Image (tube, rainbow, N blue to C red; front, side, top):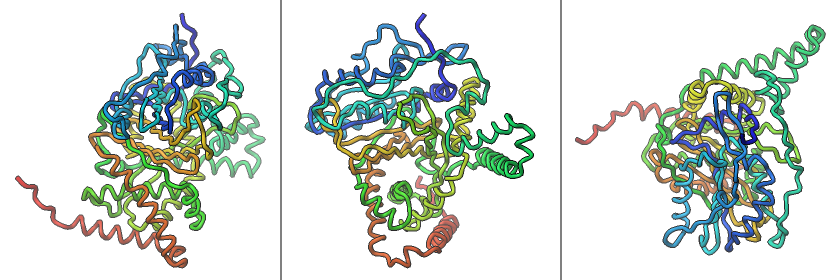
Length: 501
């Protein structure tokens, strides 16, 4: 029998989320200025990617749970392949090719990942990669992918320097809490530390008035956020949301200057994330306006992954993140007011336990029967329109297999019937936007993406043109929200035109 190791409950949850309408694969595209040598690329994968034993394993499920099972007769060439696009092989052809790969299931007989070298793309090459989410989260995978790159085109192909992950025998079941909470950090670990002190010191801890207040505060916060998640209303009904289908579309932008994004954020006392999320909200709004859809007062809920990993030198696979929900103020037309409202909402999330709670829910979902998990996760998916991720990338020029890496894109999977994923990645002084949509809902994501740069430039021009006191006006957001709400009420009262027969 092949060697096996038990899969964590959280990774099991991601394994079970796979559906024909939403494959749980993280997909990346790397564009190169020159042709990539296939043999050198294969050697790079052999020395660095296969350093992680898990990539020799396939996920399997039986009556006892989910396992990582070593694949007999593993051949790297079956997972690092090469292809050529039809016709002239331009950007449109590459996007169609990526969209087809996104919807394709993995071969259950082999490990669930593959990379394809696309020869002859745009005078150089492209590499398209897919890795099932059960193997690792985006933070871990971006580190794995970066381990394949070098700072020089003349670097020697060698194994990565990070200490190899140690193989450990499956440990004894430490109960539900052991499965769910072991990797947490930050706010989550604070809550667990408190509960651990109570269990360890008993009455001694409870007799300390300061501890009592801390325990009560955390318990009340967690209870309140659990109730908030449970009673959260469904998201706004727009063309972005609906029953998911199996066909997908992908699009991406040219990079936006990271220095310009930082400059705008610094002037307005907002973070880079605030600026980027406000720009995304503006692009989503402009697309709806172009389609003639109402936007006044509209809010769209996005699910945002939050890293729960501690800072560590060694690259560790697996999923160690929670989820928070963010209402994007799509209905605010003024780019400055929209940015300030995003900033306010992001600040409110900083003290939240949502990420820890959702991580716990994912762990619980991986321990219950599949049908129960599906009901649990569908409940959360129905509350959101999009999944949004923002990963920090390296800010220096990189090379892979000797070829200059010009651009990086990636797309995250969406669970349940969520039909849109927005990805933001910084690399080499630029910020890259990627978008994946359900073809039945948004068949033209390039028309959404096309608004990203103009929306950022609108914000930039507002900063340059608005008087300083207007930029700092605390009533700006309230006035914009009030105006949008009034327009929305007037639009709702107007008689609708009868449909033509």
